[in-house]
Length: 487
Image 1 (tube, rainbow, N blue to C red):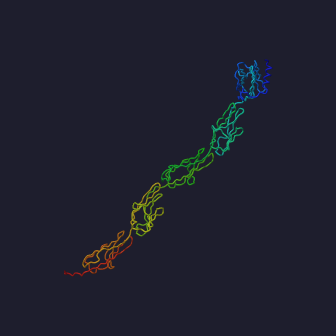
Image 2: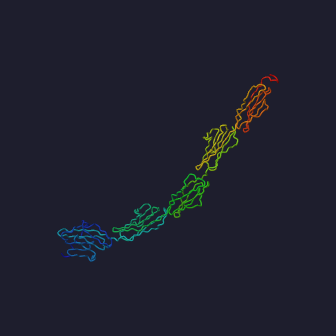
Image 3: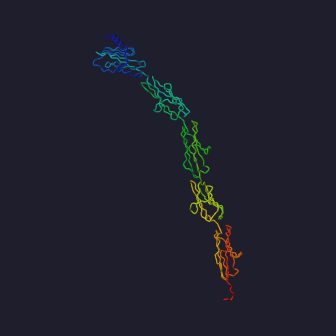
């Protein structure tokens, strides 16, 4: 067959071809400089094809009908495989993009056609990401990241670590995704950020960009070691301050809201005294964010260990019926006072009361029963001490009694004894018919006469209470007196 008539037949056959027919894939993608194989889906026939023709758009590329006819611009770039009518195109360029068609005349069969589209792309290269700044302040700074790349038909994707960055209230993607804007950055925006660029034939990723994001201080925490409700005077205390902050926070210390001269995360209190008690707090400062935050206050309470407990009386001479106060004191801060009497818990009454936080034990009117040993135990959370006081209540005299005969014979001897209840013991004075006759508890008289009859009075006297009490005893002398020589 002549070539010219065959070309006319091929051209006529391509007119009005529709895509596909399953002979060729719908689309082929290739990078500039690559080799593309237009592979048909045909099985090699038993007898060679009568003729095959390929076109690009409306331009003939190659026609075979016993003889290859190749368009001049494709010389050396194409190879036709007659076994399947497939075509190899080498060193493709951007201008090779377009529609390709094939028409195949099998021997003794109807002709077959197919077409496909070839897309040629410049490969992705030189992917680069840049940032407007990498030194940022949380909540204050916004940042713009830009992505550039060589290649054609590029798609842009931003990654934060391994996660894709998507748009939100704070995150904006503009200019086809080449610009990433993060508003009011947080510490979780530090990255690393990468720009991933792709097209159908290649992809590339930029070097990472990591931000230094300053934040804080926040979560300022003050710890005290040892951690106790009360600390003994003379002991040592360590205070530590920490904060979430980048860069690391600077610390100052305050006592009762007043700035101290000490700085740094650690503050030592050595040989503490009562004056060190108060509310301590630490203040953290970030030199990049220019923000301050203080810890909640922590209370340090310093106590003296109790010593020198004592019980003192308002009088050295407790007297029945009088009032008296016993006062319990000690060196140091007393939290509680407990009173006991003779080893048992003290029982209060209307006559016995405690006041001034149990410091004073007050007796409105002393009785004999109030005598005994009193103890006061003082305590605070660190120590305790005890003091004792023995109180003897002076009383009397009372219940003055005279024992002895009421009647006696002349010339006999008699004894009268006087007694009284009294502390200290009473002193006694005897009187006969109102005339003082003797000083002691016992009065003895020999050789009784009628003149010894009468009213004997014993007066008991307590030199401490200043009280006196008397009792009377009547004595009668009976019988005639015996004369000398009378039997």
